[in-house]
Amino acid sequence: MNPVTDQSASAATGQPVAGPAWDLSGEYPAIGSAEFAADLAAVKGAISSLEAAGRSLAVHVENAAELDPIADAGTVAELARTMDRVDETSATLRNLSVYVNCVLSTNGSDAEAAATRGYLSSLRAALGAAEAPLALVLKLCPEPFFAAFCSLPGMPRFRFALAQERKARARALPLPAERAIATMSADGLHAWGGLYDAITGTLRCRALGPDGAESTVGLAQAASLLKRPERRVRESAWRGINAALSEHRHSLAAILNSISGWRGAEGGLRSHTEPGHYLDESLRQNRLSRATLEAMMGVIRESRELGRRALRAQAGLYGVERLGPWDILAPAPADDGAAPSGIPFERGLETVRRAYASVHPSMGDFVGRMAASRRVEGRVEGGKRPGAYCTEFPKSRSQFVYTTYQGALSELSTLAHELGHAYHCEAMRDIPLAESEYPMALAETASTFAETVLGEMLASEASDDAERLELAWADAQDAATFLVNIPARFEFESRFYERRPSGPVGPDELRSVMRDAWAEWYGDALSEYDEWYWASKLHFHKTVVSFYNYPYSFGYLFSLGVYARRQELGDGFHDAYVALLRDTGRMEVEELAARHLGVDLTQPDFWRASVAIVEKKVERFEDLARRAAE
Image (cartoon, rainbow, N blue to C red; front, side, top):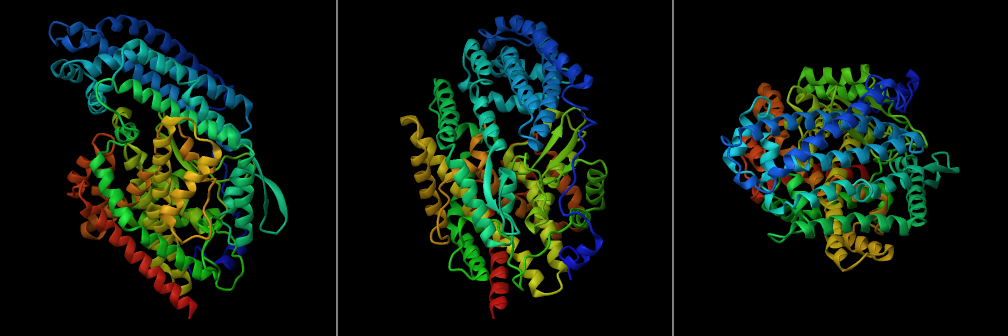
């Protein structure tokens, strides 16, 4: 038997299935601690100092395009000093925010944490307003002046990020407007995201448990039931989640409309020189060209039947004509019809460690260090928020992984995924923060690569077709997720943003738009569509980034292209892989792919080659499913 799925062995060990609690005390003992208070005071003092510096720099905004590196050498030096203070203050403020977010993730009802997050958001807005003169001068100044600034000690680390901002100089607003937007965003744009978190963090759902008894659980617990092997439990959880969300439908629709409305209004203001599009900011944030996005989405659209094939084969194994939306995260059905026990966390973590070590020993050692330092959260508790993520504290450069682990194979894959994010950050630990801020499109490279490594290792260790089928099931889910589900999200958000300028879109119309998007991509592969997906999916309500969807498909297909080089490079692969990861914060996506993979992402060839890898995985799953049915 495969050691990860040998349930009799698991039972004998007595290991707990759920994961452990993480230990954040090395960052701050508590929100009320002296250490937290000291950093908070430092941020407040620095913002006051930067506001004074901003008033001095503001006089240069109007004539920024005329600044001369020699005649205005004093201004160059003043900008550099201010930039250093902004960088340090921003890192400390982010450190505080990361801690508070971690606390709220495990307990959405923590009133002190919620209040502190709101206060930190106001400080973030104040910092944005204080640094606005600095940002505008560096965005609008002539290239010789900018080059002089970047040549000063410590300033080269900002060159790439600032150069990206300079590309958007046509969208700059006058200083008072930039300050106003930064100041109002805390209680405007970002407050709506906070409201969504507050609603979903305290939401209670009625759902059947694995024992068949109905109970009231938190949203995170209900969401984890969607990965249970019992189909009636999954359907009950799905319907319970949607019923709970429907009670808040008007509030949730208002949140979505307000986030989009803010972006639309700001985008309209910034389109004073050239016309804007609702995708502009997302593409800029992802350092991605429209040509690359269109090439990828075009290939995905022509390949969507591949994802549907995976869903149909899954339905056959469950003995149903079509899967329901509650089945898209389901585990492979047990061959004896019994619900398998969960994979104990320690056993699962060791499996992930071995998978990482199969690429390079240092990668396995990293997983061991994450566990030993208690930087993984995996408990199952009612107050936890749904989802999984990896976060990094800027001051210590330490990574923490958040999950709600209940032992499903898909959750093992999620653990590998999030640890992949952590390894990505670890690979950049010695790189300045300003050069380690990679875009979301590249953020999924290491995480999806890690999932692929885990799946391939488990498949190589499988001893029979039953085990191979269980693992191939995960490949089928990936195909359906990245070639159907993620594009359906992109379709919904695109249609929503096209409609939003005509006025707020009500909950019933949002359900209709979502239903149409699912119909477009899922076709007849499901028994019904998830009309409430716009409300249940956190990603639509993110305020820091928009279109939090297509980068996942990008990362999936891009990482397959990276993984394909593993056999080709042999012992040299790990060094090449780490070199690619280290450049993700200081190159545009197309440049990174050209330098490290030798490919042109604006053409369909690369994307079709990655889809061909997916097709082989789906064909393997279909073959195993046919054999299982014989």
